Length: 139
Image 1 (cartoon, one colour):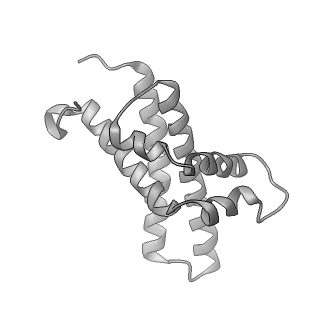
Image 2 (cartoon, helix red, strand yellow; image 1 turned 90 degrees about the horizontal axis):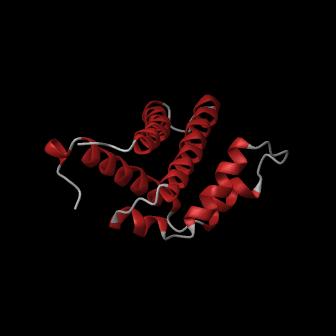
């Protein structure tokens, strides 16, 4: 099986974003938001996860990849809100509570669950592409 090198590169971006998710989840499990450290670090990991996830979305679209569940998730206004969030993370904003951060949380339709679902289904997609004999081939 030959795999497009660009897909392998996109997978790397997914791994990076997903690793921030695991740091975020681990921190919430250990400390929650109960401490200043927990609040600062959880926001750090969440923001880098969300920003990195948007990079994966850009790559998905650029490579013109298709998968029904992921395509449904990407057909959401949350995509543009996540793009703005990513811009807030990776471009300096002098306002600590810039709209780029708050809009995703306040205007996004089930934003937290949507991000988790998208992350999960992207992970499934890569597993099925790279290990079809174990995880089942994509149609």
